[in-house]
Length: 100
Image (cartoon, rainbow, N blue to C red; front, side, top):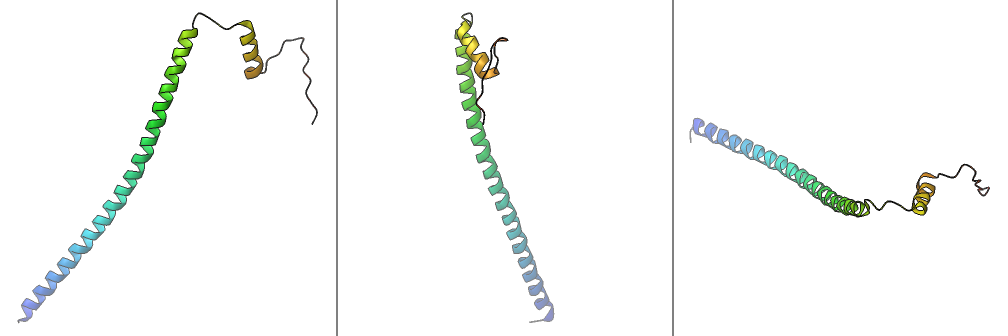
């Protein structure tokens, strides 16, 4: 074999090795990107399910409020909400708390 053909064979080998290395690097990059996208998709699917559940709960709450519309709260119900939720008391009312 001539020296020129040996150089061509070595050059072809180097080209093949470089092509294989580039292909492997590209495959690794795409694999990492695919895994990242899969995880993000799973998170978004979970968020979607939570949002759909919240929508269902809010629609039920809206229907409940529309059903109560016009009925109003009784005085006792309003007083209980004011005491529990807003910690309101009558002006002449004295509150005793246990000492710790």
